[in-house]
Amino acid sequence: MDFIIDATLKAVKHLYNTDITPADVSLQQTRKEFEGQLTIVTFPFTKLSRKSPEQTGADIGEYLKENVKEVAGYNVIKGFLNISIADSYWLEQFYTNVLGANYNEVKPNGTKVMVEYSSPNTNKPLHLGHIRNNLLGYSVAQILTAGGYEVIKANLVNDRGIHICKSMLAWQKFGNGETPESSGLKGDHLVGKYYVIFDKEYKKQINELKAAGQTEEEAKKNAPLIVEAQQMLQKWEAGDKEVISLWETMNSWVYAGFEKTYNSLGVDFDKYYYESNTYLLGKDIVEEGLASGVFFQKEDGSVWIDLTADGLDQKLVRRGDGTSVYITQDMGTAQLKYDDYQVDQSIYVVGNEQDYHFKVLFLILEKLGKSWAKGLYHLSYGMVDLPSGKMKSREGTVVDADDLIAEMEATAKEQTEALGKVDGFSEEEKSELYHTIGMGALKYFLLKVEPKKRLLFDPNESIDFQGHTGPFIQYTHARICSVVGRAEVNIDDEIDAELFGVERDLIILLTQYRDMIQQAAKDYNPAAVANYVYELAKAFNKFYHEKSILQADTKEQMQFRLQLAKASAAVIKAGMKLLGIEVPERM
Image (cartoon, rainbow, N blue to C red):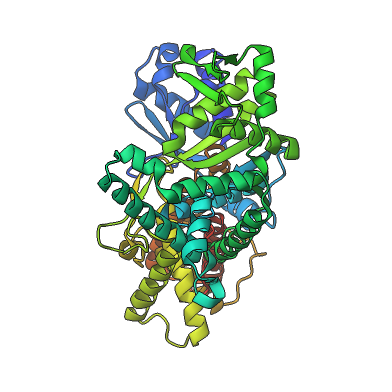
């Protein structure tokens, strides 16, 4: 709507002989209770006009109506000038920018972005928290791609450390050679089972040592299992062939299990980084920081950075014995990622419990003079809770991702069959539909909320064909496909239609799609896409209930409404795809 801003500048110059800038014009969408589509705030111009806000609005409104062919009328409410844009403008936008062949195409903007998400540990299966992480990361990557960015989807896998050795040692001691094939368990669940066994046996040993007179701290340190796990880690770091072989075997089980979960979630990656390859990185950056005076060394040989002047604290970056801490390898991995791809922006999708860590990491890299550090961003998100008693978890503490996916499919089946929406479907089609609806419900519910907010996920509430849900939008798409499928739609014919309110509202929403994508990409915010698609689905349903499509008064009117329906389906499908959600053509 730049033409309205330009015309307002001319109006102020003509009426009040004063030059203003585009930044001086506050343009917003007209509130639904008033007539018009665009509103100009007139209060700032009263000092130029020396008139009331209402009279100033009337002056500018009259000028626009007389001089801008797209302006059909105006009304003034206090200090707000509401402008009605001519139907001819909306029709032109519809045929050129909505039904046009290049509507979904966007020119590359030359910005390269890495989105790092998932980041699982290889000692246990993915859980509900991982689901939000994966869905956020994948959706942000999709939105950025749609916005013209070149995107690399990365996964940094935590595949080493004491927690991995715990699963390995427990399997060695208690596993009797059990494999995914012999047990019928997914590989990640099998390895997770032994992580739980380690914990139980370790606690037994702690209690025995405490009963023998040791303090809790001594017992935790001296328990034979933890001592053996630490020895195993030392052997792994020394390259012991037997330990490395077991590590590779058990990790391969986990990766096969993860891949099945990723496929069910519909997420993927372009690049995998493994901490087993990156944990030694960053030591050269520590030396670099010492040489430049950014870091300092204490008497025990440990290396630190003092961030107190920045409102933070002193941060250890290398231990006195020369070994790395977590932030050391994070510095090294950040450098590696930049060296690999020369990205302009690097987004870390990580829970909000790591807010402080990333604040420190990014600040350190900036102080080290890394030119790319300004492009680092932590996409922080809140926890996901379930209503108490809704689902039991395998370990009793966290909700397993595979269990939740199965629960969603079962709930989708139950509710879809209760509504009688699968008559005429084969068993295979039903199974596919239940997965599509279940995953659509899960993804939409988690993505419609701003990432930073903690949320309560209720599986039953998420599968509601009438609410603010994925299935409501999916059902709207299927409804449109059903209508359009019963008639011939010629989208090449431009029809000079008379627009009714619901039709105009639908066109206006459709024309906002591209701008919405650009804003969502800028904000890394799938919730903006989710809520836009919901508003579009609602607007279509209102149109569908108020205006007959196939029984329209004239053939031209029917064609125009079919064009509107087809465009709505296309934009709903495109928007849902950015959330990683499929929309069925019938349900």
